[in-house]
Image: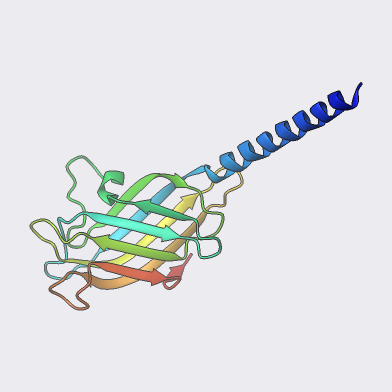
Length: 167
């Protein structure tokens, strides 16, 4: 073999190795997990809402996150179920990027729209059902807050950073 053939062969092997590594990294970061979300609406007068609700959870350890812009689109209750009504325990499920660690930070947001924009949230629970090397993890956050502009604390979102009941 000539020096030029050796250089070409070495370059090709290096190129193939790098491509394989990049493919592996892309596959690892794109791994999808199944998520189950439970939201408990409070039992207070006018606690339910017709507003659009979004949810964001993230792992504090590496910043990976799940964002669901319309939680009702993940609904798993019976057909024609009215989500986020007074006293409801609503269940949702969908796929999203796997988190290598337990989700600790959560933001639940109401867009304040609809016939009943005010909403009282008791708690939110998120479970990641692990696949491949991703762990199965769960976290439950106590919210106990109005998401409303007409009720204290006059916010349309609730942020919880690692607080709540860990399972």
